[in-house]
Length: 437
Image (tube, rainbow, N blue to C red; front, side, top):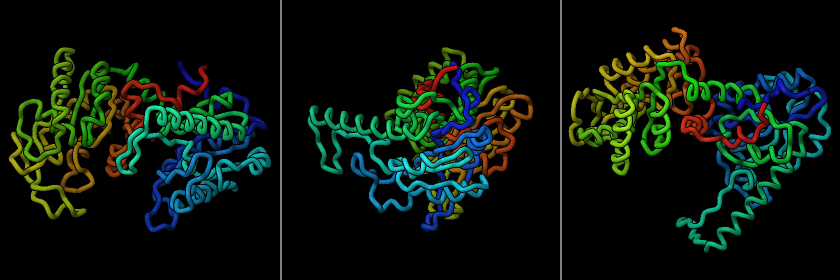
């Protein structure tokens, strides 16, 4: 069922508590310079809409993975690299108005109470509090922790109570809750899902709405032929995705490092290529399932191989060859070859719906990028031919941007893990918590 959005609620004179995804990359020199503002720009339509409608805004987000403090206390001061203050400054420039920065997300009462229509505040990193996303481990060898069942249950209950208390506090800052952070919608954190238990109405922002529409329609109501492309390093990262998509697609293309486990399952020699031996049986099962269902499952028919993994950025320290058949001992597949690009491209160009998640090889090294960029060229034709092309987060997004083809895609997802879980068929907590239309 469709979720309520900002269009479905009265915003004039209201204070909106909005979860955004400002988890932006920062320069590693400690300057606080934002190196990619894509996620900030993506949030602007929802932010501007609230302000144009006469509302005020309290924005909250996480940034990176700071060391969580004790329950009920912010993280230690060594986490200066994870402050959202530079984001507040950048957002001020983009909006052309001051964004009030609140240095402690759990101590914002005074700033929030003073907000007037058209004004914006940004809370400090919600992950500075362990209650936001902390987990309890029963056994942790590194820290020498081994809890009894009773201790484990008690600590989980304590963390749950702390998360609820944090969510209740955050909820007190708004009159309407809006989630526009698809990138964290798969997490049941205090600021993404639990907060909606204490603040209603809870609605979707425009970015989240767009993500749900594109990914939801693609998976549940695709215009056929429907082709999914999966890449990346490991089969284990996409076990459930492969299984779910085999019930949805007409063609499933598998490239990247994960393809070599499938090729081993076919009985082919893969040399020193990445392989998860414990997943070989699963790959056989999936190939048999595809054959039974009449679904095309395409794997690379040739590979770009190297004598070792590159250490240099330009890959000048490795020997590269093209391999049609078995990969020799000591060599590893690091990209798909031209015949595979042609095979995959033919399937993609005939599609009306394409979902792509994961590169075809080590595209960050120029000599090993031709496979990924070749597939990207094919995916770029889908939208031009009246179809829908969806890029599902992570390295695929980076590859599409580097290829210069981003504008030729129908939709580029802002959520790596969230888009994967959506493709798995999972219910995302941050979406489920919102009100239905």
